[in-house]
Amino acid sequence: MEKTTTDVYWTDLKHPKFGDQPLYLAATKQGFCRITWPSESFDTLTTWVIKHIPGATLINDQEPLSEYVGQLKEYLEGTRQTFDLPLDMRGTKFQTAVWQALTHIPYGETRSYSDIAGEVGSPAAVRAVGTANGANPIPIVVPCHRVIGKNSALTGFRGGLQVKQELLRLEGFEDFTLKGHARFQF
Picture 1 (cartoon, helix red, strand yellow):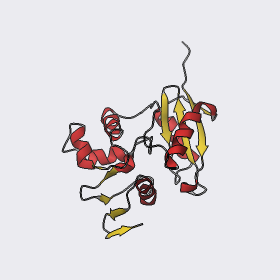
Picture 2 (picture 1 turned 30 degrees about the vertical axis):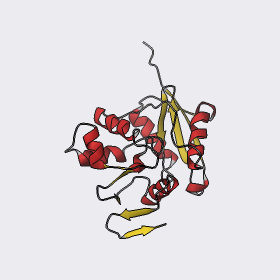
Picture 3 (picture 1 turned 30 degrees about the horizontal axis):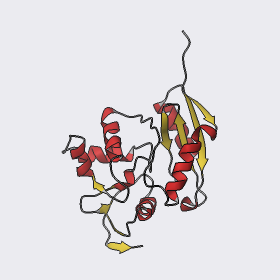
């Protein structure tokens, strides 16, 4: 019996919001499966694919990703507030439930980790929600940056708090509280 492999198409996206650091984008035929942060390398993408899509073939081809790239650019330029893209979320049942809940947070709004825990039917699982949020493989499109501490503080963020602040600022927020720091404006 011949083994079937999954093709994972990838490309990079450079945008002034991230300086000269690219985001690596990947999708299968089912949909968007991974976006790296500017602080992450191509090796991050490769390692993720090996772990989550065993036996996959990585193919550098922008054409299958053109709509993904276009919608991300529109968002980063402030002309898009929602994404209309198929997603191929790969994680545990709990993780995917959290990630689905994140997709319901409207542009320009935030939710607390405890709000998300309640939405997924596990109100005591606030830390587990934080862990799932941090493992989100499709940031920006699945807006983990819109999740903040219950006291409105910006807390740990895999992409870096500066990136989180920039994404929230893009969506109209100007005043933030960093965990352990006083409120300040940008």
